[in-house]
Image (cartoon, rainbow, N blue to C red; front, side, top):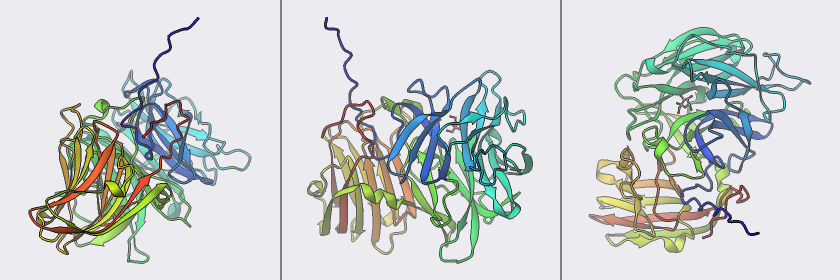
Length: 503
Ligand code: FRU
């Protein structure tokens, strides 16, 4: 007898193809970023049961190249406590005693949130098989200070004193508490940093890491990054950072950060950023990834069967500038592997009439553009990504006021009052030139300005899957000196239960 079959789910218009998203269900912060034996681990805040925040557990994905991700079984499930954000390390010397057969254990420190008591304390889980399966250590936390606002431990090995360091937030106090441990299970309070820089309802997801200062051999500074739940330049949540010195106990900023916080990204959608532990020294990169979302509307964004995506992985460098130390971000070079259908345009005069880039791009919804623009006499240069329903997302350059912006006010059907608007970043254009490297992936746009001196990361939710780029100048003349355009190939196999999306 024939039975009615449920219709297959509609292909998700918004689902990124080369940014990591869970196969299905809700995901937020990246967690436990660690490299071990050829694999980059990406754990993430995950609800195994649904498409909104809840039952927080650690989802798990791995990649050999930071580009092709494979999702695995849940690594740390919810028990009486939810498994909130945290980090993971390779315990090379088996300081925890949790290693077997001469192999170092992988150790994760995460916040256990008890929904009944609201207590937040730090728990330990470990893996004896290189990160595939995880066991909980003991019956309770390894660090409990009786707080309801103490979370997101970032742990790393501090070689000079041969101990572990943990940075965790006292969230509502806007502080980062630093602890040390010989064995990852016994923790001693060392110092407390903050409040400083941008205050927020909560500080979340701290990170602390050394960076070589570019162009100053032998000079190292430490970056303390803290995610602020609100008050970021684009409204809502974002990542601020401090640069300073760290002696194994105290972090001391080298600049006065009091009045003008420094933000990692000026778009609306980069939050809960974190960097990888244990990248081999012969690689030496500091690699960062963030949750491409904003606490203002995170729960409301369209997305099915998954809701939640990561930014592209980025490599950081630290520079001494006239304004002080600043991080620069570049998409990781491994992404070059996804480029296809290369097209080049040279010396295109730009005026009021939009020049279509359609001939250069076979799939604008999944594309990378790298362009050099000579700003000429133009008041504005506009790159418009328009979908088949007429919705448009604009990347704009305003040379006279030295700003690059994303305008997503008319990017798609309305879904939340907190969404929308225009995000801008200050870029010095006195030279008359600007370089933009733009990545579009259906509902994510990332703009790297002047080789990552500034970045804008935004989600947008268009009306259709077909999109076209065009470029124009307003109020004068400008020149597209050079454009490289690529279609970006998807990393995701279509075998994850979802229908292939046809083009
Ligand atoms: C940041 C955050 C963390 C917390 C986790 C819970 O987005 O609120 O502070 O550990 O998400 O999912």
